[in-house]
Length: 123
Image (cartoon, rainbow, N blue to C red; front, side, top):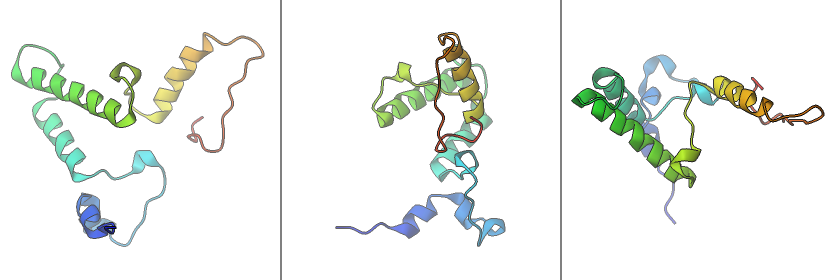
């Protein structure tokens, strides 16, 4: 059985080579997590070249829309769901608020939503 190559994995995360972060560990929450270089590179390219309204008939817009579609398709595949079952939003807190508003319209007096200690602290 192959062992996990920790050095290779660490090399995929630019934050681990950032001297100002050396010797620290960050356990606040998922929103504060550092991303791998592939995500950083994609976001950098998107903000540098394709941060326009998607799906218009010019290259930056068309390519931006295609990348958004690719992200939805790949993430849905990773989660083994249909792409129309996937929702993107600005933050866990905002997504939870929108979901609560949607469910609130279906709830009746006496219905309950159970929130556990495992859920996001904003709940």
